[in-house]
Image (cartoon, rainbow, N blue to C red; front, side, top):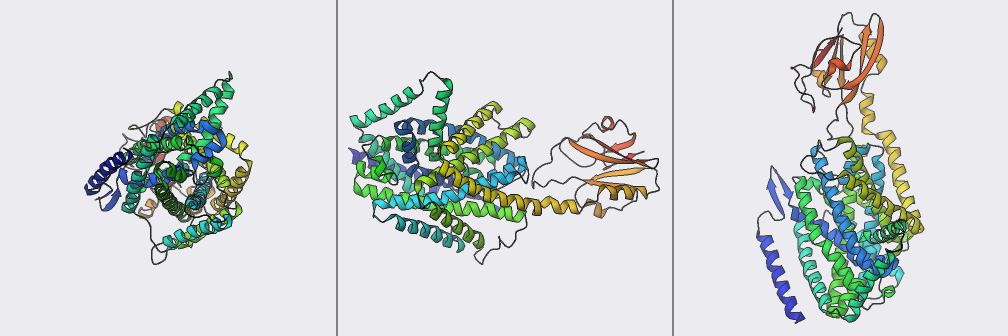
Length: 590
Protein backbone atom coordinates (compact mmCIF):
# COMPACT_ATOMS: atom_id res chain seq x y z
CA UNK A 1 0.00 0.00 0.00
CA UNK A 2 2.72 2.47 0.97
CA UNK A 3 4.88 1.62 -2.06
CA UNK A 4 1.98 2.01 -4.51
CA UNK A 5 0.97 5.36 -2.98
CA UNK A 6 4.52 6.70 -3.18
CA UNK A 7 4.95 5.59 -6.79
CA UNK A 8 1.71 7.30 -7.86
CA UNK A 9 2.57 10.56 -6.07
CA UNK A 10 6.12 10.61 -7.46
CA UNK A 11 4.81 10.02 -11.01
CA UNK A 12 2.32 12.89 -10.66
CA UNK A 13 5.01 15.22 -9.28
CA UNK A 14 7.47 14.35 -12.04
CA UNK A 15 4.79 14.95 -14.67
CA UNK A 16 4.03 18.36 -13.20
CA UNK A 17 7.69 19.34 -13.09
CA UNK A 18 8.27 18.21 -16.69
CA UNK A 19 5.30 20.34 -17.75
CA UNK A 20 6.72 23.38 -15.94
CA UNK A 21 10.19 22.95 -17.43
CA UNK A 22 8.76 22.68 -20.96
CA UNK A 23 6.70 25.83 -20.49
CA UNK A 24 8.45 28.91 -21.98
CA UNK A 25 9.38 31.54 -19.41
CA UNK A 26 8.65 29.31 -16.43
CA UNK A 27 11.95 30.17 -14.77
CA UNK A 28 13.33 33.09 -16.78
CA UNK A 29 12.48 35.18 -19.82
CA UNK A 30 14.02 37.88 -21.99
CA UNK A 31 12.34 41.27 -22.16
CA UNK A 32 13.39 44.91 -22.51
CA UNK A 33 16.97 43.99 -23.32
CA UNK A 34 17.73 41.76 -20.33
CA UNK A 35 16.92 38.42 -18.72
CA UNK A 36 14.39 38.42 -15.87
CA UNK A 37 13.61 35.70 -13.34
CA UNK A 38 10.02 34.59 -12.90
CA UNK A 39 8.23 34.44 -9.55
CA UNK A 40 8.65 30.65 -9.63
CA UNK A 41 12.44 30.90 -9.98
CA UNK A 42 12.64 33.44 -7.15
CA UNK A 43 10.35 31.31 -5.01
CA UNK A 44 12.38 28.15 -5.60
CA UNK A 45 15.71 29.87 -4.87
CA UNK A 46 14.36 31.26 -1.60
CA UNK A 47 12.59 28.00 -0.75
CA UNK A 48 15.86 26.08 -0.95
CA UNK A 49 17.31 28.59 1.51
CA UNK A 50 14.35 28.53 3.90
CA UNK A 51 13.80 24.76 3.67
CA UNK A 52 17.24 24.04 5.13
CA UNK A 53 15.97 25.19 8.53
CA UNK A 54 13.82 22.08 8.85
CA UNK A 55 16.99 20.01 9.34
CA UNK A 56 18.00 21.74 12.60
CA UNK A 57 15.23 24.09 13.83
CA UNK A 58 12.68 21.47 15.10
CA UNK A 59 15.27 19.91 17.39
CA UNK A 60 16.29 23.35 18.68
CA UNK A 61 12.64 24.28 19.33
CA UNK A 62 11.99 20.99 21.16
CA UNK A 63 15.09 21.56 23.28
CA UNK A 64 13.61 24.79 24.66
CA UNK A 65 9.81 24.32 24.83
CA UNK A 66 9.34 20.56 24.71
CA UNK A 67 6.22 18.95 23.15
CA UNK A 68 4.48 22.30 22.58
CA UNK A 69 7.01 22.91 19.74
CA UNK A 70 4.66 20.91 17.49
CA UNK A 71 1.87 23.48 17.92
CA UNK A 72 3.98 26.62 17.99
CA UNK A 73 5.97 25.71 14.87
CA UNK A 74 2.64 25.81 12.99
CA UNK A 75 1.54 29.06 14.68
CA UNK A 76 4.92 30.67 13.96
CA UNK A 77 4.52 29.70 10.30
CA UNK A 78 1.27 31.70 10.20
CA UNK A 79 3.00 34.67 11.84
CA UNK A 80 5.83 34.56 9.29
CA UNK A 81 3.33 34.41 6.40
CA UNK A 82 1.62 37.48 7.87
CA UNK A 83 5.01 39.21 8.08
CA UNK A 84 5.71 38.39 4.43
CA UNK A 85 2.86 40.73 3.42
CA UNK A 86 4.96 43.55 4.91
CA UNK A 87 7.96 42.47 2.84
CA UNK A 88 5.78 42.72 -0.27
CA UNK A 89 4.89 46.25 0.79
CA UNK A 90 8.60 47.07 1.19
CA UNK A 91 9.22 45.73 -2.32
CA UNK A 92 6.54 48.04 -3.72
CA UNK A 93 8.05 51.03 -1.91
CA UNK A 94 11.53 50.29 -3.23
CA UNK A 95 10.22 49.99 -6.78
CA UNK A 96 8.36 53.31 -6.46
CA UNK A 97 11.62 54.97 -5.44
CA UNK A 98 13.43 53.25 -8.32
CA UNK A 99 15.72 51.31 -5.98
CA UNK A 100 16.55 47.88 -7.35
CA UNK A 101 18.56 45.36 -5.36
CA UNK A 102 19.90 45.58 -1.83
CA UNK A 103 16.64 44.43 -0.26
CA UNK A 104 16.16 45.35 3.36
CA UNK A 105 19.47 47.26 3.44
CA UNK A 106 18.26 49.59 0.69
CA UNK A 107 14.97 50.09 2.51
CA UNK A 108 16.62 50.90 5.83
CA UNK A 109 18.97 53.28 3.98
CA UNK A 110 15.95 54.98 2.41
CA UNK A 111 14.03 55.36 5.67
CA UNK A 112 16.72 55.68 8.34
CA UNK A 113 19.45 57.46 6.39
CA UNK A 114 23.10 56.63 5.72
CA UNK A 115 24.45 56.41 9.28
CA UNK A 116 21.51 54.72 10.99
CA UNK A 117 21.22 52.18 8.16
CA UNK A 118 24.52 50.63 9.30
CA UNK A 119 22.54 49.11 12.17
CA UNK A 120 20.62 47.17 9.55
CA UNK A 121 23.82 46.41 7.63
CA UNK A 122 25.44 44.99 10.76
CA UNK A 123 22.41 42.85 11.60
CA UNK A 124 22.03 41.54 8.06
CA UNK A 125 25.74 40.84 7.67
CA UNK A 126 25.83 38.93 10.96
CA UNK A 127 22.84 36.90 9.73
CA UNK A 128 24.74 35.95 6.58
CA UNK A 129 27.81 34.99 8.62
CA UNK A 130 25.75 32.79 10.93
CA UNK A 131 23.80 31.30 8.02
CA UNK A 132 27.04 30.05 6.50
CA UNK A 133 28.45 28.81 9.82
CA UNK A 134 25.27 27.08 11.03
CA UNK A 135 24.56 25.55 7.60
CA UNK A 136 28.06 24.12 7.24
CA UNK A 137 28.04 22.67 10.78
CA UNK A 138 24.52 21.28 10.29
CA UNK A 139 25.48 19.79 6.92
CA UNK A 140 28.26 17.81 8.61
CA UNK A 141 25.98 16.83 11.52
CA UNK A 142 23.28 15.49 9.19
CA UNK A 143 25.91 13.54 7.29
CA UNK A 144 26.92 11.93 10.58
CA UNK A 145 24.23 9.36 9.88
CA UNK A 146 26.52 8.06 7.13
CA UNK A 147 29.81 8.12 9.05
CA UNK A 148 30.74 8.76 12.68
CA UNK A 149 33.72 11.07 13.22
CA UNK A 150 35.09 13.00 16.24
CA UNK A 151 33.78 16.52 16.89
CA UNK A 152 37.09 18.22 16.00
CA UNK A 153 37.08 16.45 12.63
CA UNK A 154 33.55 17.71 12.08
CA UNK A 155 34.80 21.27 12.66
CA UNK A 156 37.56 20.77 10.11
CA UNK A 157 35.10 19.34 7.58
CA UNK A 158 32.74 22.31 8.17
CA UNK A 159 35.53 24.80 7.51
CA UNK A 160 36.53 22.74 4.48
CA UNK A 161 32.99 23.12 3.14
CA UNK A 162 33.21 26.89 3.61
CA UNK A 163 36.51 27.23 1.77
CA UNK A 164 35.35 24.88 -0.99
CA UNK A 165 32.27 27.04 -1.60
CA UNK A 166 34.48 30.16 -1.45
CA UNK A 167 36.73 28.60 -4.09
CA UNK A 168 33.79 27.87 -6.37
CA UNK A 169 32.62 31.49 -6.06
CA UNK A 170 36.13 32.78 -6.76
CA UNK A 171 36.18 30.64 -9.91
CA UNK A 172 32.86 32.21 -10.88
CA UNK A 173 30.85 29.00 -10.49
CA UNK A 174 27.43 29.57 -8.95
CA UNK A 175 24.29 27.53 -9.07
CA UNK A 176 21.78 28.98 -11.51
CA UNK A 177 18.01 28.88 -11.44
CA UNK A 178 17.81 25.62 -13.42
CA UNK A 179 20.26 23.80 -11.17
CA UNK A 180 18.39 25.04 -8.10
CA UNK A 181 15.11 23.92 -9.66
CA UNK A 182 16.63 20.49 -10.24
CA UNK A 183 17.55 20.21 -6.56
CA UNK A 184 14.03 21.44 -5.75
CA UNK A 185 12.56 18.57 -7.77
CA UNK A 186 14.70 16.07 -5.86
CA UNK A 187 13.77 17.68 -2.52
CA UNK A 188 10.07 17.66 -3.42
CA UNK A 189 10.10 13.94 -4.19
CA UNK A 190 12.00 13.08 -1.01
CA UNK A 191 9.87 15.27 1.25
CA UNK A 192 6.62 13.94 -0.22
CA UNK A 193 7.85 10.39 0.40
CA UNK A 194 8.89 11.39 3.92
CA UNK A 195 5.52 12.98 4.73
CA UNK A 196 3.46 10.15 3.25
CA UNK A 197 5.63 7.56 4.97
CA UNK A 198 5.33 9.45 8.25
CA UNK A 199 1.53 9.75 8.03
CA UNK A 200 1.13 6.05 7.18
CA UNK A 201 3.46 5.15 10.06
CA UNK A 202 1.47 7.04 12.68
CA UNK A 203 0.46 4.72 15.48
CA UNK A 204 -1.46 5.14 18.70
CA UNK A 205 1.66 6.27 20.59
CA UNK A 206 2.49 8.95 18.00
CA UNK A 207 -1.08 10.26 17.99
CA UNK A 208 -0.90 10.33 21.78
CA UNK A 209 2.21 12.53 21.62
CA UNK A 210 0.45 14.90 19.21
CA UNK A 211 -2.50 15.11 21.58
CA UNK A 212 -0.10 15.66 24.48
CA UNK A 213 1.40 18.62 22.62
CA UNK A 214 -1.99 20.35 22.35
CA UNK A 215 -2.74 19.62 26.01
CA UNK A 216 0.66 21.03 26.96
CA UNK A 217 -0.10 24.29 25.13
CA UNK A 218 -3.61 24.49 26.56
CA UNK A 219 -2.36 24.11 30.13
CA UNK A 220 0.31 26.78 29.62
CA UNK A 221 -2.19 29.29 28.24
CA UNK A 222 -4.75 28.88 31.04
CA UNK A 223 -2.74 30.37 33.87
CA UNK A 224 -5.30 33.09 34.60
CA UNK A 225 -2.77 35.87 33.97
CA UNK A 226 -2.86 37.65 30.62
CA UNK A 227 0.76 38.82 30.96
CA UNK A 228 1.98 35.32 31.80
CA UNK A 229 0.10 33.85 28.81
CA UNK A 230 1.59 36.53 26.55
CA UNK A 231 5.05 35.65 27.87
CA UNK A 232 4.45 31.97 27.10
CA UNK A 233 3.43 32.80 23.53
CA UNK A 234 6.45 35.08 23.02
CA UNK A 235 8.87 32.50 24.46
CA UNK A 236 7.43 29.77 22.26
CA UNK A 237 7.38 31.83 19.07
CA UNK A 238 10.94 33.05 19.71
CA UNK A 239 12.07 29.43 20.11
CA UNK A 240 10.45 28.41 16.80
CA UNK A 241 11.15 31.37 14.52
CA UNK A 242 14.53 29.96 13.50
CA UNK A 243 12.63 27.37 11.45
CA UNK A 244 11.68 30.10 8.94
CA UNK A 245 15.00 31.83 8.47
CA UNK A 246 15.50 32.97 4.89
CA UNK A 247 12.01 34.39 4.38
CA UNK A 248 13.50 37.87 3.98
CA UNK A 249 15.74 36.67 1.12
CA UNK A 250 13.02 37.23 -1.49
CA UNK A 251 13.59 40.98 -1.23
CA UNK A 252 17.26 40.47 -2.08
CA UNK A 253 16.16 39.27 -5.54
CA UNK A 254 14.17 42.45 -6.29
CA UNK A 255 16.75 43.47 -8.89
CA UNK A 256 16.20 40.20 -10.78
CA UNK A 257 12.42 40.53 -11.30
CA UNK A 258 10.43 43.09 -13.27
CA UNK A 259 7.92 44.07 -10.61
CA UNK A 260 7.11 43.81 -6.94
CA UNK A 261 4.11 41.69 -7.99
CA UNK A 262 6.54 38.87 -8.76
CA UNK A 263 7.77 39.15 -5.16
CA UNK A 264 4.17 38.90 -3.92
CA UNK A 265 3.60 35.72 -5.97
CA UNK A 266 6.85 34.23 -4.68
CA UNK A 267 5.73 34.78 -1.08
CA UNK A 268 2.40 33.06 -1.80
CA UNK A 269 4.36 30.14 -3.27
CA UNK A 270 6.53 29.95 -0.14
CA UNK A 271 3.46 30.02 2.10
CA UNK A 272 1.89 27.08 0.26
CA UNK A 273 5.09 25.01 0.19
CA UNK A 274 7.65 25.50 2.95
CA UNK A 275 5.01 27.16 5.14
CA UNK A 276 3.16 23.83 5.19
CA UNK A 277 6.02 21.34 4.85
CA UNK A 278 8.15 22.63 7.74
CA UNK A 279 5.52 22.41 10.53
CA UNK A 280 4.16 19.14 9.11
CA UNK A 281 7.55 17.39 8.96
CA UNK A 282 8.42 18.78 12.39
CA UNK A 283 5.16 17.46 13.85
CA UNK A 284 5.74 13.99 12.42
CA UNK A 285 9.37 13.83 13.59
CA UNK A 286 8.71 15.22 17.08
CA UNK A 287 5.85 12.75 17.64
CA UNK A 288 8.04 9.77 16.75
CA UNK A 289 9.65 7.48 19.37
CA UNK A 290 13.09 9.14 19.22
CA UNK A 291 15.56 10.03 21.95
CA UNK A 292 15.92 13.66 20.90
CA UNK A 293 18.97 14.40 23.04
CA UNK A 294 20.93 11.88 20.99
CA UNK A 295 19.76 13.13 17.56
CA UNK A 296 19.74 16.94 17.74
CA UNK A 297 22.06 17.18 14.73
CA UNK A 298 20.47 14.47 12.54
CA UNK A 299 16.83 14.38 13.71
CA UNK A 300 15.18 14.42 10.27
CA UNK A 301 17.50 11.87 8.57
CA UNK A 302 17.16 9.52 11.56
CA UNK A 303 13.36 9.88 11.49
CA UNK A 304 13.40 9.15 7.74
CA UNK A 305 15.29 5.91 8.37
CA UNK A 306 12.58 4.88 10.85
CA UNK A 307 9.62 5.41 8.52
CA UNK A 308 11.04 4.36 5.13
CA UNK A 309 14.13 2.32 5.92
CA UNK A 310 17.88 2.99 6.31
CA UNK A 311 18.47 3.64 2.59
CA UNK A 312 15.86 6.38 2.59
CA UNK A 313 17.48 7.85 5.70
CA UNK A 314 20.77 8.00 3.80
CA UNK A 315 18.99 9.78 0.89
CA UNK A 316 17.54 12.37 3.28
CA UNK A 317 20.96 12.87 4.92
CA UNK A 318 22.53 13.46 1.51
CA UNK A 319 19.74 15.89 0.58
CA UNK A 320 20.18 17.73 3.89
CA UNK A 321 23.92 18.11 3.32
CA UNK A 322 23.40 19.26 -0.29
CA UNK A 323 20.76 21.87 0.54
CA UNK A 324 22.70 23.13 3.55
CA UNK A 325 25.82 23.53 1.41
CA UNK A 326 23.68 25.47 -1.08
CA UNK A 327 22.64 27.68 1.85
CA UNK A 328 26.33 28.32 2.53
CA UNK A 329 26.68 29.39 -1.10
CA UNK A 330 23.62 31.63 -0.77
CA UNK A 331 25.26 33.32 2.22
CA UNK A 332 28.44 33.91 0.20
CA UNK A 333 26.53 35.39 -2.74
CA UNK A 334 24.17 37.54 -0.65
CA UNK A 335 26.90 38.87 1.64
CA UNK A 336 29.16 39.68 -1.32
CA UNK A 337 26.34 41.62 -3.00
CA UNK A 338 25.67 43.53 0.23
CA UNK A 339 29.36 44.36 0.77
CA UNK A 340 29.73 45.31 -2.90
CA UNK A 341 26.86 47.79 -2.59
CA UNK A 342 28.27 49.30 0.61
CA UNK A 343 31.84 49.39 -0.77
CA UNK A 344 30.70 51.09 -3.98
CA UNK A 345 28.69 53.66 -2.02
CA UNK A 346 31.65 54.52 0.20
CA UNK A 347 34.35 54.28 -2.51
CA UNK A 348 36.21 51.17 -1.29
CA UNK A 349 37.00 50.25 -4.87
CA UNK A 350 39.95 48.01 -3.94
CA UNK A 351 37.57 45.66 -2.12
CA UNK A 352 35.26 45.14 -5.08
CA UNK A 353 37.96 44.50 -7.65
CA UNK A 354 37.06 41.43 -9.71
CA UNK A 355 39.26 38.73 -11.22
CA UNK A 356 39.11 37.47 -14.78
CA UNK A 357 36.08 35.37 -13.86
CA UNK A 358 34.22 38.54 -12.80
CA UNK A 359 34.22 37.28 -9.21
CA UNK A 360 34.50 39.48 -6.11
CA UNK A 361 37.34 37.29 -4.93
CA UNK A 362 38.59 39.62 -2.19
CA UNK A 363 35.16 39.79 -0.57
CA UNK A 364 34.83 35.99 -0.78
CA UNK A 365 38.21 35.53 0.94
CA UNK A 366 37.24 37.98 3.70
CA UNK A 367 33.91 36.18 4.17
CA UNK A 368 35.58 32.77 4.33
CA UNK A 369 37.97 34.02 7.02
CA UNK A 370 35.05 35.45 9.05
CA UNK A 371 33.03 32.25 8.74
CA UNK A 372 36.00 30.11 9.78
CA UNK A 373 36.76 32.32 12.77
CA UNK A 374 33.16 32.10 14.05
CA UNK A 375 33.16 28.29 13.76
CA UNK A 376 36.34 27.98 15.82
CA UNK A 377 35.20 30.59 18.36
CA UNK A 378 31.97 28.66 18.95
CA UNK A 379 33.81 25.29 18.75
CA UNK A 380 31.44 24.29 15.97
CA UNK A 381 28.53 24.05 18.43
CA UNK A 382 25.21 23.93 16.58
CA UNK A 383 23.43 25.01 19.77
CA UNK A 384 25.49 28.21 20.22
CA UNK A 385 25.32 29.06 16.52
CA UNK A 386 21.55 28.53 16.54
CA UNK A 387 21.20 30.84 19.56
CA UNK A 388 23.24 33.56 17.85
CA UNK A 389 21.39 33.10 14.57
CA UNK A 390 17.94 33.33 16.19
CA UNK A 391 18.88 36.60 17.93
CA UNK A 392 20.29 38.13 14.74
CA UNK A 393 17.33 36.96 12.68
CA UNK A 394 14.75 38.51 15.00
CA UNK A 395 16.83 41.71 15.26
CA UNK A 396 16.79 41.98 11.48
CA UNK A 397 13.02 41.48 11.42
CA UNK A 398 12.58 44.20 14.08
CA UNK A 399 14.61 46.68 12.03
CA UNK A 400 12.73 45.94 8.81
CA UNK A 401 9.26 46.15 10.31
CA UNK A 402 10.24 49.17 12.42
CA UNK A 403 11.50 51.01 9.32
CA UNK A 404 8.26 50.16 7.51
CA UNK A 405 6.27 51.44 10.48
CA UNK A 406 8.18 54.76 10.43
CA UNK A 407 7.66 55.07 6.69
CA UNK A 408 3.94 54.35 6.81
CA UNK A 409 3.19 56.74 9.68
CA UNK A 410 5.02 59.58 7.92
CA UNK A 411 4.11 58.89 4.29
CA UNK A 412 0.78 57.07 4.52
CA UNK A 413 -0.29 55.34 1.32
CA UNK A 414 0.34 58.14 -1.18
CA UNK A 415 3.20 56.18 -2.78
CA UNK A 416 1.75 52.66 -2.45
CA UNK A 417 -1.89 52.91 -3.46
CA UNK A 418 -1.95 49.53 -5.24
CA UNK A 419 -0.93 47.43 -2.24
CA UNK A 420 -0.69 48.40 1.39
CA UNK A 421 -1.33 46.77 4.73
CA UNK A 422 -2.76 47.90 8.05
CA UNK A 423 -0.49 50.16 10.10
CA UNK A 424 -2.08 48.82 13.29
CA UNK A 425 -1.31 45.27 12.21
CA UNK A 426 2.28 46.28 11.44
CA UNK A 427 2.58 47.87 14.89
CA UNK A 428 1.27 44.73 16.60
CA UNK A 429 3.66 42.59 14.55
CA UNK A 430 6.59 44.84 15.50
CA UNK A 431 5.70 44.62 19.21
CA UNK A 432 5.59 40.81 18.99
CA UNK A 433 8.97 40.68 17.24
CA UNK A 434 10.50 43.14 19.70
CA UNK A 435 9.21 41.02 22.58
CA UNK A 436 10.75 37.92 20.98
CA UNK A 437 14.07 39.74 20.67
CA UNK A 438 13.94 40.72 24.36
CA UNK A 439 13.20 37.14 25.39
CA UNK A 440 16.03 35.70 23.30
CA UNK A 441 18.60 38.16 24.67
CA UNK A 442 17.47 37.35 28.22
CA UNK A 443 17.32 33.57 27.89
CA UNK A 444 20.41 33.03 25.72
CA UNK A 445 23.15 35.20 27.26
CA UNK A 446 26.04 33.31 25.67
CA UNK A 447 24.61 33.61 22.19
CA UNK A 448 23.65 37.22 22.91
CA UNK A 449 27.19 38.15 23.93
CA UNK A 450 28.74 36.63 20.83
CA UNK A 451 26.08 38.17 18.58
CA UNK A 452 26.48 41.56 20.27
CA UNK A 453 30.29 41.53 19.92
CA UNK A 454 30.09 40.57 16.25
CA UNK A 455 27.40 43.15 15.51
CA UNK A 456 29.25 45.89 17.43
CA UNK A 457 32.43 45.30 15.44
CA UNK A 458 30.56 45.48 12.12
CA UNK A 459 28.46 48.45 13.26
CA UNK A 460 31.40 50.38 14.72
CA UNK A 461 33.43 49.97 11.57
CA UNK A 462 30.45 51.00 9.46
CA UNK A 463 29.77 54.16 11.43
CA UNK A 464 33.43 55.21 11.21
CA UNK A 465 33.28 54.69 7.46
CA UNK A 466 30.03 56.67 7.21
CA UNK A 467 31.55 59.63 9.05
CA UNK A 468 34.63 59.84 6.83
CA UNK A 469 33.53 58.49 3.46
CA UNK A 470 29.79 59.19 3.23
CA UNK A 471 28.76 60.11 -0.36
CA UNK A 472 27.13 63.36 0.77
CA UNK A 473 30.42 64.69 2.17
CA UNK A 474 31.87 65.15 -1.31
CA UNK A 475 28.68 66.78 -2.55
CA UNK A 476 28.64 69.22 0.38
CA UNK A 477 32.27 70.15 -0.27
CA UNK A 478 31.38 71.12 -3.83
CA UNK A 479 28.74 73.62 -2.71
CA UNK A 480 29.22 77.21 -1.58
CA UNK A 481 29.05 78.25 2.05
CA UNK A 482 26.44 80.72 3.32
CA UNK A 483 29.01 83.51 3.50
CA UNK A 484 30.14 82.81 -0.07
CA UNK A 485 26.57 83.25 -1.28
CA UNK A 486 26.19 86.47 0.73
CA UNK A 487 29.48 87.85 -0.63
CA UNK A 488 28.43 86.95 -4.18
CA UNK A 489 25.11 88.77 -3.87
CA UNK A 490 26.71 91.76 -2.13
CA UNK A 491 28.95 92.34 -5.15
CA UNK A 492 25.95 92.61 -7.47
CA UNK A 493 24.71 96.07 -8.46
CA UNK A 494 21.37 94.79 -9.74
CA UNK A 495 18.18 95.69 -7.96
CA UNK A 496 16.65 92.21 -8.30
CA UNK A 497 17.97 88.86 -7.08
CA UNK A 498 17.17 85.68 -8.99
CA UNK A 499 16.91 82.35 -7.14
CA UNK A 500 17.01 79.44 -9.61
CA UNK A 501 16.06 75.87 -8.72
CA UNK A 502 18.04 73.52 -10.93
CA UNK A 503 19.11 69.93 -11.32
CA UNK A 504 22.70 69.06 -10.33
CA UNK A 505 25.27 70.50 -12.79
CA UNK A 506 22.50 72.21 -14.77
CA UNK A 507 23.93 75.63 -13.92
CA UNK A 508 27.07 74.74 -15.88
CA UNK A 509 25.27 75.14 -19.21
CA UNK A 510 23.56 78.41 -18.29
CA UNK A 511 24.98 81.90 -18.62
CA UNK A 512 25.76 83.08 -15.10
CA UNK A 513 24.79 86.51 -13.86
CA UNK A 514 26.04 88.29 -10.74
CA UNK A 515 22.53 88.53 -9.26
CA UNK A 516 21.67 84.82 -9.56
CA UNK A 517 21.79 82.08 -6.93
CA UNK A 518 21.37 78.41 -7.82
CA UNK A 519 19.67 75.97 -5.44
CA UNK A 520 20.03 72.23 -6.06
CA UNK A 521 18.44 69.45 -4.03
CA UNK A 522 20.78 66.60 -3.17
CA UNK A 523 19.58 63.27 -1.83
CA UNK A 524 22.31 60.83 -0.72
CA UNK A 525 19.79 57.97 -0.80
CA UNK A 526 20.46 57.03 -4.40
CA UNK A 527 17.38 56.31 -6.47
CA UNK A 528 14.99 57.78 -3.93
CA UNK A 529 12.45 60.37 -4.93
CA UNK A 530 12.66 63.56 -2.91
CA UNK A 531 9.92 63.95 -0.34
CA UNK A 532 7.78 67.06 -0.45
CA UNK A 533 7.21 69.58 1.01
CA UNK A 534 10.76 70.65 1.87
CA UNK A 535 12.08 73.55 3.89
CA UNK A 536 14.08 76.05 1.83
CA UNK A 537 16.16 78.96 3.10
CA UNK A 538 16.24 82.00 0.81
CA UNK A 539 18.76 84.82 1.31
CA UNK A 540 17.38 88.32 0.82
CA UNK A 541 19.72 91.29 0.36
CA UNK A 542 17.90 94.55 0.90
CA UNK A 543 19.14 98.01 1.93
CA UNK A 544 22.61 96.66 2.70
CA UNK A 545 21.28 94.01 5.08
CA UNK A 546 21.06 90.25 4.54
CA UNK A 547 18.03 88.34 5.80
CA UNK A 548 17.47 84.56 5.75
CA UNK A 549 13.88 83.35 5.38
CA UNK A 550 13.06 79.65 5.86
CA UNK A 551 9.70 78.26 4.84
CA UNK A 552 8.13 75.03 3.59
CA UNK A 553 8.52 74.71 -0.16
CA UNK A 554 5.03 74.03 -1.45
CA UNK A 555 2.65 75.03 -4.22
CA UNK A 556 1.55 78.18 -2.39
CA UNK A 557 4.81 80.08 -2.48
CA UNK A 558 3.28 83.56 -2.17
CA UNK A 559 1.85 82.74 1.26
CA UNK A 560 5.00 80.87 2.26
CA UNK A 561 7.10 84.04 2.44
CA UNK A 562 4.90 86.70 4.05
CA UNK A 563 7.84 89.01 4.74
CA UNK A 564 8.96 89.14 1.10
CA UNK A 565 7.20 90.56 -1.95
CA UNK A 566 7.56 88.46 -5.11
CA UNK A 567 7.22 90.18 -8.47
CA UNK A 568 6.91 86.81 -10.25
CA UNK A 569 7.16 83.12 -9.39
CA UNK A 570 7.34 80.12 -11.69
CA UNK A 571 8.71 76.59 -11.58
CA UNK A 572 9.60 74.73 -14.73
CA UNK A 573 10.71 71.32 -13.38
CA UNK A 574 8.30 68.43 -13.34
CA UNK A 575 8.45 67.52 -9.65
CA UNK A 576 6.10 65.45 -7.44
CA UNK A 577 3.42 67.71 -6.01
CA UNK A 578 4.37 70.75 -8.14
CA UNK A 579 1.93 71.38 -10.98
CA UNK A 580 0.09 74.29 -12.42
CA UNK A 581 3.08 76.66 -12.68
CA UNK A 582 4.12 78.28 -15.98
CA UNK A 583 7.44 77.32 -17.58
CA UNK A 584 10.73 78.74 -16.42
CA UNK A 585 12.67 77.92 -13.27
CA UNK A 586 13.27 81.18 -11.49
CA UNK A 587 11.77 83.66 -9.09
CA UNK A 588 12.51 87.34 -8.67
CA UNK A 589 12.69 88.86 -5.22
CA UNK A 590 12.49 92.63 -4.82
